[in-house]
Image 1 (cartoon, rainbow, N blue to C red):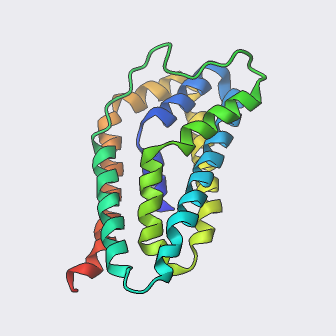
Image 2: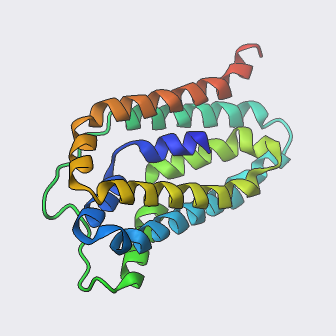
Length: 197
């Protein structure tokens, strides 16, 4: 979950969408979007777990699973470190016709997270790697939902203040590099047992 928190902390489209909605509509206006993001991340994690988590029931796949998972995690780390600073324009934030249209905001958040390739690659790396062997993989799915929701609401509460949003964007590169290094460290830990093989 700490690794997933590092993925969430990298400033990108999700964070900018939450921040923009919070700045435009306040905390209450962005809460359904945050819930949609959390549910989308959980759905993506569940789909990947059901698809790839069963691979560890087969013998002889430990080496391959660690290798694939570690490499995927390194690729995610590189992508996070190379994330460009989002452009702040009027068209960046998702627009809703009515503020009270919570179902539209929920669906937008769900679609954003369920199709996020960085989240998908990170979850796949975990289900092919350490989570696939631990037996606690099913617990990761509700935890991913809880972490995504808590982080989204935290970002919303911070970015509801325009000054905080400007500061985060000003330090975009440092946040991306720090998050990427944390993910790369997790990848090294995943691959480390293979060096002695």
